[in-house]
Length: 212
Image 1 (cartoon, rainbow, N blue to C red):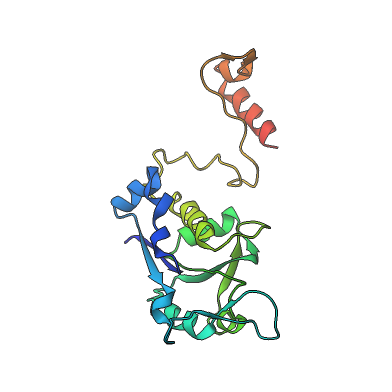
Image 2 (tube, rainbow, N blue to C red):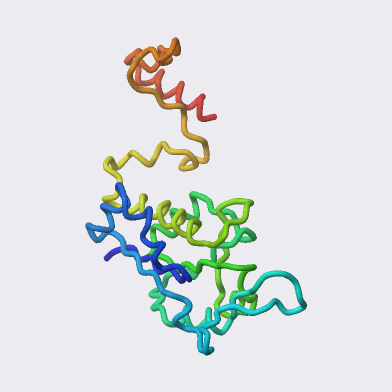
């Protein structure tokens, strides 16, 4: 059974996008995960297929309509997947949450646009809001791709070596230690001697200290 990502977006052509290259793309070709983009505008009922309207109480910009978003979200079979809205006001995305999502059946991800979405939709559908940082993007598509890539790379069979993710930043609550490779000398900067000593215990100790 694959890990399935369904993206609710006004720009389905953005997917899979960068997710279709390198190990993430190969994993999709192998059926380890799948990607489906749903056009939100298809669920608009007005003559001009409007998905947004002016904010109640006044103010600049437009707000995505609760009824249109609900119709789009309800068209998707959840199958136990979390419904996530990529939002700068959401909880910060952590490696711990990524691991939880990767261990499940997948995710349904809403990509917002304009000034955001009607709060009533978020409340009515118990939507989880997730942020990838304290900044604002033009839309949630790039943020959704970030979340998906973080999850997919943890799926069994995606990474080349089974231990390749265990020493990475945040997996142990620490940042990853510095990495080096050939040449031994680069512009007068040499690889730390301990890494060339052959003493595995000393190397592990050095890496632990650097991570701390």
